Structure formats: structure tokens, C-alpha cells
Image (cartoon, rainbow, N blue to C red; front, top):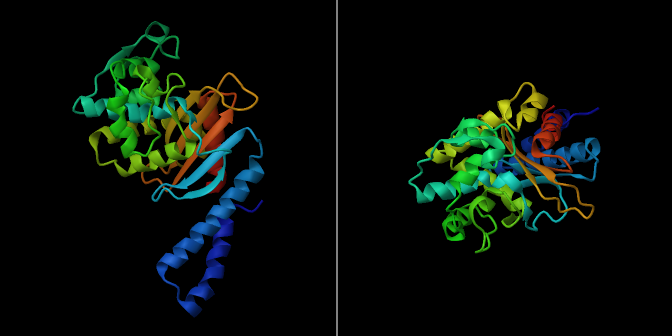
Length: 285
């Protein structure tokens, strides 16, 4: 099977005589390489992951350019579950001088998805394990007016004025965001990594890939690490399931070049992470 990397080698060989004859500028060469890489990645993903219930968006993590996609109605707002948590955290930070509390998650008792709880968590570990208890606590007093500046800054669909509390962290279906806008928001988030609050969030995403809800991504990649956020939300397919799993993964962790957003029908986000990891490994081969 011809890999994406092998195709890129051929592309570079073909481009060499063009460069020497016409001497196109660096921007033209980069654009040509990007276009051919995008075509190769799209072909590989569509061929090796043909399941119609697997949707994906592949973006350049530096520019936000959409490289490849198979996601019907990617611009239509839908519930995206815990993918909203980093932005809820930033909205909270705007109201509290970016001082984030610690919290004791007691599982079902405090409204977490994990019955036994996560114990003592801070912002980074709450991102890593997608702790609902922490985010219920963090967003308890948030209003739509509090969230609007952050949503606007990152280009997210704005929440309805009746949205409140944990709904800003994806706990419910009221705050609906288009998949493409969400993917691009994570690119913007990466660009804000100089901010201490964002560094905490990205540290949590790195922990997620190492040992949290996104650990299946790193397991699939093997030789590379990622930044990952998972989510589970109400299914919006014509044949509904109890829920759909969502993943945003950026690789490599230290200086991401690619962002892959995946939706897998009928599974939680932690399971969808396996598919996302396999897709990234296929692209990186």
C-alpha cells in the first residue's frame, strides 16, 4: 500500500524540475505541496476508513486551512459535548482573573460521568479526564453574557441567552456549535498558548493523550504524542444512537502541524479516540 509520505516524496521529485525551470516563489511551492498533501490525505482516509458513520475534518494547525473532510453539514451547529470545556474554562477565567480552583470530584454524587469520581482535580486534570463534576462546579454561575466574549474571540457560534451553567461545558444540548467552527477554534486556541490559562488547557490535552480520555490516540500513534480533547454528545444522525463520540487531536504535541476532528456514531469520545489515532497514524506513515 502506498503511504502518504511516499506520495509526498514523488511530489517533491516532480516539483524539482518545475522549480529549476520556472523558479516559482516559495509560496507557490508551499501551496502546491499543501494541495497535493491534502488530496493524498483525503484519499487515504476515505479509502481506509470508509464507514459512513465516521466523519472527519483535517486542518493545517498553523493556518486553520481545511485540508480534507468528510462531514455532512459541517457548518451546521450541533451539540459537541465536552469539546466546549476549554472555552467554558476561558470564559470562567475572564470573570475570575484566570484563577482556577481545585475541586473534589465524587463521581455520581457530584454529577460526573465516572461513578467513582476523579478525586482532587485542577483545571489541567479536569481537561485530561473530561471531569463533569469539575466543570459543573466551574460554570455554576456562568451566563450567556459571560461567555459571549470568549465565543466571539474564538469564532464559535454564540450561545442562546437562556444557556446557563454546565450547558457551556457541553453538558446538555443547548449550546450548539458547528463542527468546522469548533475545529478552527482549537487552531486559534493553539495560537494563544502564550497565555497561562491556555497553557493549562493544552497541558490537560497532553495529559488526555497520555493517560486520560484521549489515551487511545497516543496508543495508536506509538512513536508520536498528541494534544487531545474528547467529547460525547447527543446523536444528530437520521438514525439516532444514544450518543456520538467526538475527538479533536493535534499532532505532534510539541508543535502541532495537523488538527484532526473526528465524530464516530454511537460510541463515547474515549472510544472514538481510537479511530482518530488510527487515522492520524495512517496520515503520518
